[in-house]
Image (cartoon, rainbow, N blue to C red; front, side, top):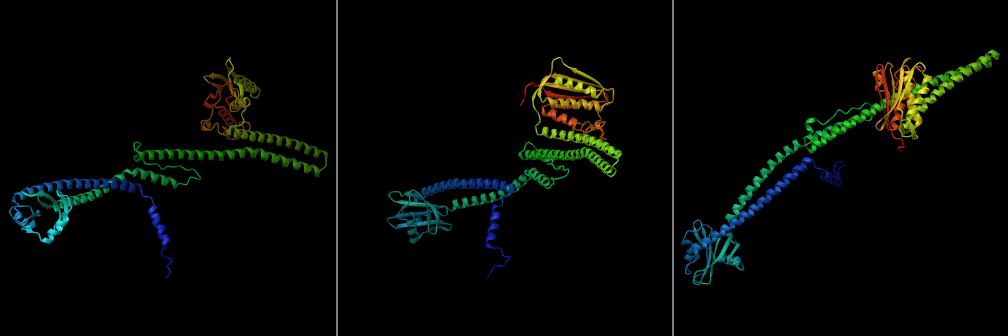
Length: 511
């Protein structure tokens, strides 16, 4: 008979059992098992130890009772009387056993019952004799046929070398021990049940912050973070974060991690936005000269075709003149694109830590020469140089630092009206060389001040060549200064704008 397709095979049953066995327990289950198991072990050991000690005490008391019974029996022994006569001659506890031997009547035995002493049969005496044979004559615990376990002691008979045996049943001891063990077992079971409930409540309350951490992590894991503007608002509740506990520290650490991840995602989004804007700005800057090149080239081709169709000298001369002007404009736009591409390449190399050639730079001389070059380019501005008598020297790339100063002066010339006074100063302040470019122009629009050093940032949104360049000048200056380990900043109010460059004043190559 073949198995049904729906019936689980033995292999699948074994795999399912193995999975259940290997499935890890929860932390609450492990804690409860460990605590309850340890408490149960301790209680069982206490119960066993108590029972053993109490059993020893009860046996000692029973042995004393046997001795007391023997003391009462010994004066009553007359070897012409049987054991039954001896026990009937006094009041003895129920279960008292007496076995004696006399030359007159032989071996006799009796046991006290509720109705009085009862003589033992020969068969009982024979079995008792077999049980007592070879044992310690002083005290022993024997299992007597039809009577149960007895504590038996041997005592010398008066006036002879013989012994008589007196015993009391161990049922009192075993009954007491059994009752105690039963009570201990019931109390232990009830206590463990109550302990399990209390521990379950305590552990559940104690693990509530950890569950909150797990729930928060689960919600965060379900968020999609691979695209778009992502903001992680999930946090472990403050009432579940206590840095004085280990679980609270985990919650605090998770919140810190989420804060940093959220900040990183925001920074990533900002970088993506900057990159999109950068690509858009670069495309715009390149599109204009490319459109000009295309237009002038088409104009030249049209003029040449017209000259070919009309072979008059006047047409040919006009075509040559148009072509010459178009080539000049194409060359100008090509230079513009070349400058833009070189600026972008410079920024990329500076970002990679390349493009600097270190040497000793006299910043004072560099500033004086830059102001001298700026005067012819901005004759309608007032140019002032303020430097110390001692030259300020540092380690750097002289051509790149010259580019920084030239960009700052060009920025001041381009964005301030005629008659503006521009002052360039160079000083040493501690371990830093400080270059300042100050002007008393209208100042910087606060709306663009925060993005002033970003790439393609322009105060003039019109992108007019007369009022601004590509918007890379200040970003290049910042990249060069930071590549030298320095900082650049600006402070601006109407009538008071200052660009400040701080560089480490180290006159040797730091590499």
